[in-house]
Amino acid sequence: MDGFKGYFIAEFVDEYVSGLITRREALRKLAAVTGSVAAASSILAACSPSPPPTQPLPTPTPQPTPRPGVTVPPDDPAIEVADVRFPAEDGAAVMAYLSRPRGAGPFPAVMVCHENRGLVEHIKDVTRRLAKAGYVGLAPDLLSREGGTNRLDGAQIPGILSNTPPARFVSDFQAAFKYLQAQPFVRRDRIGMVGFCFGGGVTWRVATKLPGLRAAVVFYGPNPPLEDVPNIQAPVLAIYAERDNFVNPGIPAIENAMRQHNKVFERVVYPNTEHAFHNDTGPRYNAEAAQDAWARTLAWFERYLKA
Image 1 (tube, rainbow, N blue to C red):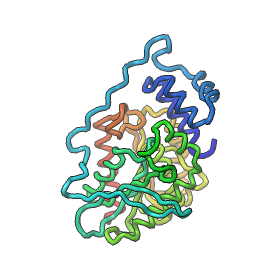
Image 2: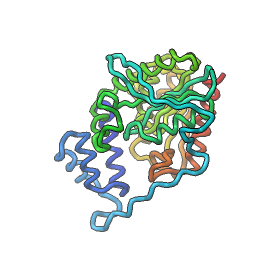
Image 3: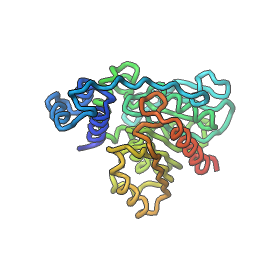
């Protein structure tokens, strides 16, 4: 399958098998991705949810309350936030959320790529965490041409993202890169990127197409086309969850490709964690692993963006 379609299918099947979503929710999401209810039904027919369908699905896990100090409120006196727009290569206006430290700067910057739910509050909070750590954080909304995340039904979003050519996502981040370089408060030669889940896959692809990128951190993202790995210039930190059954099979291939082409690469697999463990608003959040992974992320950017 082209682009991210196969990744989205695997993710939703995993959520269904794990009991995180009902069969109806899985059908709706898979139909949005495949464009066919029949195809979605066929995919689910080959799966066995846990527990078996003769037993009721468990009560959905309540969203955990973020620990004090994890999130950064928009009115934190140490930062400034704003909704911004910048032009894409095709002339479209890309909407984005920007957070920055107070002061003239210039500061290093980090682009943030959202998950398959679009530019939600959690991703905005990630940009604020970066600002609190001394970076300009910019999170583009990859659904800008469709009106933006806030104007869409959440069930539509996976179908839109999975059926959009990945080149459009890369192009939007190339435009975000140019936007940041034009800001007087940004160190134009110290721009990195971080992405989560689907956004991790986009981060990999951007790294293969943006030679000016100075550092990248990928949270459990699907691999880029391996033939593009030689183009990567940025040091890459790849973070994975031990019990991620649909992303982890690709680890050996990307690790071998990065080593073969002498790229700066570090891989970390967190034990007893599942896909999306960093998201403190989700059912798979693992506070201990998330805290350590974020510390590693900041250390990576400290090494390559603040030097």
